Amino acid sequence: MSGELETTASRCHFWLPNKRRHCANTPLPSSIYCGNHNPSSAPKRVPCPIDPSHTVLQDSLELHVKRCPFKKQVDALEAKPYYSKSINAGDSDEPTVSSAYKRGSIHRLSTSDFWALINKIKSVHSSVVQVLRDSYLVPESCEKWLKGQLDKCLPYQEKHVVQQASILGNMESFGILQRENNEAIAGTENSKPEVRKNDVAVVEFGAGRGYLTQMLADCYSVRKVFLIERRSYKLKAYRSLRQNESLALERLRIDIEDLNLCGVDSLKGVPYLATGKHLCGPATDLTINCCMGENRKEGKGKIKGLAIATCCHHLCQWKHYKNKKFLSDKGINKEEFHAMTWFSSWAVDGDHSSDDPSIEDETRPLEVCEKNEAHSDSGGIERVIRSMPAIERAAFGFMCKEIIDTGRLLWLKENGFDGQLVSYVPLSISPENHLLIAKKQS
Image (cartoon, rainbow, N blue to C red; front, side, top):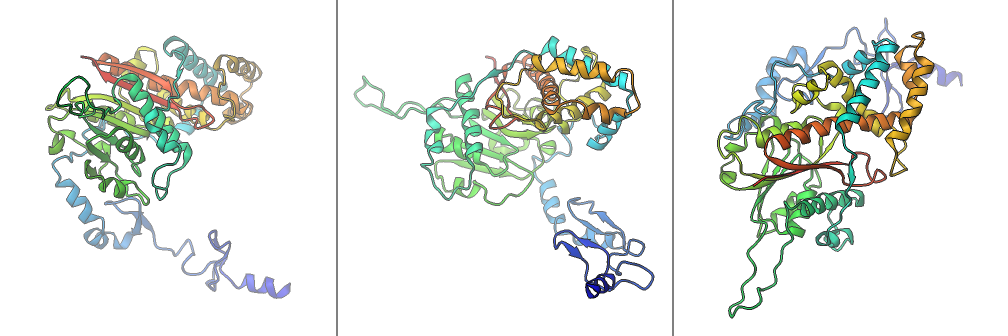
């Protein structure tokens, strides 16, 4: 035992979490850490200005920028005709607010102000949000996917397949996607196949690995598809989609914020549907702006419909949000919007084993908590939040998500679209179950 203690004492005290042990190097004479891990002597690392996903030594920053392997990719992207920096970003003067800042702003409230904000949001919810209709639809066209009759080499999970199928089922039910009919037209001497119904392009935003598009191509025989994704993924459907000779496929590796659809030559003059499964936070607003924003000077009106599964509302930003006027008319300012986005994370923190957590039933215990805490600030907001059972926080989180998505729906309706906001899968499959679906009015 004494030998082990002596060995430990002679090692650097920096803990390596991946190896679950301390660093094996010898510490410096004047420190408990080695030269690599000594905080006072360690060189400072800063994010790379070209691609912040990696860091570099500050002293080597100027040299690194010249030879960064991502620089060539960035230069190539900026030369594309469809690249336009921050074209869909909304209010460029507004800063991006971090989740830590949102949390800090809420925790600095007094208890009475905290409950006043809770009640204000609940009042707005009751005045503008309609009960979301359950719309879990699995179309007959997608049965072969659900039964696993396709290529077993495709690495997909069943829960994602049923979500994708329900998105397509709702698109079909709402009339923006039609089932293909390859039967000959009866009653003519020279029978020919029926004219194709899906002669529109599909633009999938935030495509990820592309399995929503894969299902679309397999089950609805679309002819032209555009995949929009800023990251590179392994195990993606792109390779199998390329093997489909009847499908014109184009993959654009770009942030939605910088995408100018007018610059995509192969999409000019082509009617299209916009889709997206789990467009995180502001990506939904960026997509709406990309398709229908003020920057669409040419080709306006080509979008026929959209179906977007929204999620991660806690990441939403005031600068991007599409319907600020809706919130302002209801008395919700920028700070309260950011608080509401932070509260929305409660929706995915609770127990979702029940498919029907009644918001009305869960508001009563919130009132009880409010009475218990109304006259005491000693514990702070953290204690107030901890006193709320998880399912009650989840119910309020869903209220916030519904308000945010309702504002997006109302904006679409005010701009020439017929739309719905539905729950497209049960909570037991995913608590992120909002589908925003709309079609252009004729």
